[in-house]
Length: 165
Ligand code: SF4
Ligand code: SF4
Image 1 (cartoon, rainbow, N blue to C red):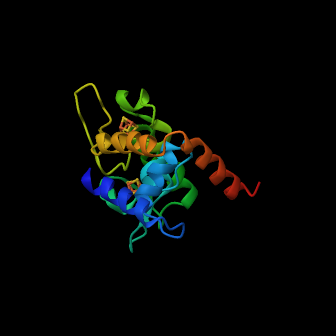
Image 2: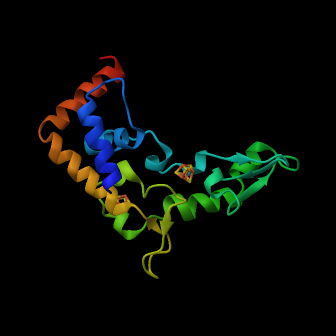
Image 3: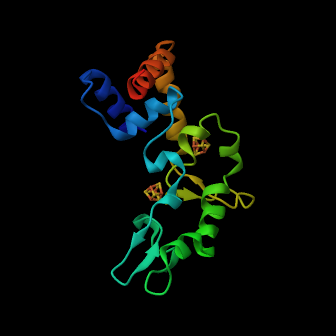
């Protein structure tokens, strides 16, 4: 927790529009109600694959040995992507969110964090929860408190710049 708070404080003090800290950027965007960019915030791990020198496809390299999707030497890319192993990954790791996350006000900006950093909290939760959940919640709250009423305006300005309006 202290590391995130320290990074955020440093980012604030630096006050340089050309300087960004990815995790902090994502937390600020989330606190402002903007969609995330980094994979650890988007809940879209199924869109990343790792391919080894034998042509085997897995999930992202952080968890590649756990989820084998198929091999390009014996299947087409379309078959691998549509295949049952990858669809099972989507069902179990992407769609099957813990109860806490389903009820969380930050779900759209967190998506249960990085899939490789989850753990089961109770026997009723088939899918594990992000191990840094409380840190994230704290930071979303903290950033909202720091920026207060200016946050929606910041988000509006940011969106206007990005959309070119
Ligand atoms: S902050 Fe915690 S409860 Fe909320 S979506 Fe993220 S991991 Fe789930
Ligand atoms: S497992 Fe983590 S690092 Fe890999 S794609 Fe998913 S969020 Fe990103």
